[in-house]
Image (cartoon, rainbow, N blue to C red; front, side, top):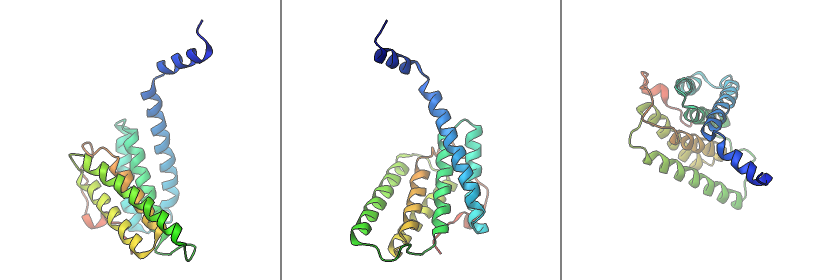
Length: 184
């Protein structure tokens, strides 16, 4: 009989990791959908509509068994919602130079990762491209305005959208202006 550590390793190797990840992503999608439902009650109708479009994409992905993409779409929706709700306020008043530097570094890391993932895709859904570009543009604008919470949330939204596989996204028949979520 193998020692307990070896037996545990052997059992772990036999466990269906893909299946476990599938459930993990489905649970993530469920959690994001719950939080998004709460957030949507506080959003203006135009923002709620745009966020709802991403939620519909996520539902399609869940039905197709693409739970990771669904979770990322809902994560992006959640971050967009927080960004819009954060407003242009500066939060806690004046922040230290050290905190500002840390925020800027994190912002740059988020946008770098988003851009890398986005550029690695050969094909882009036009609807998701609009959301991605809008989030990136709004993130940069918010950072320049000193709305750091908002800037980080839009950057996180763009980063989440960049993780979604683009070649499977359905085409969305809607007005381009309704898709824009920008800083006011």
